[in-house]
Figure 1 (cartoon, rainbow, N blue to C red):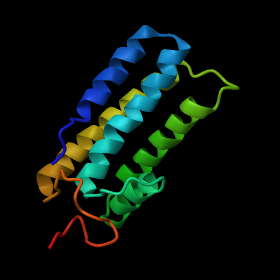
Figure 2: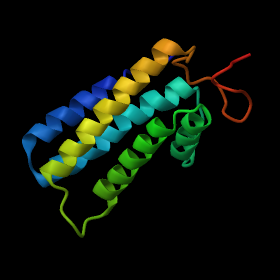
Figure 3: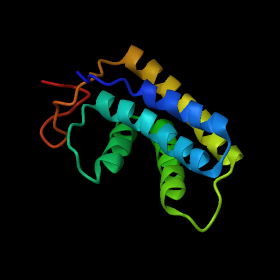
Length: 136
């Protein structure tokens, strides 16, 4: 079981979004992604800390029939990568707001999914060694 609640990251994203300056917009987009990514990863039972964990998390939800959720996670990740690494263009308040709205949608989907499935909020299950949806 995780000690940290990823919803706190979403609260930070909302706070940053209210500041309306470029650094805050960029940080809000990044935090909006991480707030839902951490929850999605933990619900999937993925414990590895590896650069591919983002893709593995998306693929988990695709395999589980949650293709829309996986696409939204992917879109948020692209927005996060852009906000974090693309300094040649501005990240607007409108873009930050779009990321915030999408993260709220993903969070709601994750809550609904957690209510329907036996997902575990755990970081002890290995993606390569067991099926996190149907644990032993």
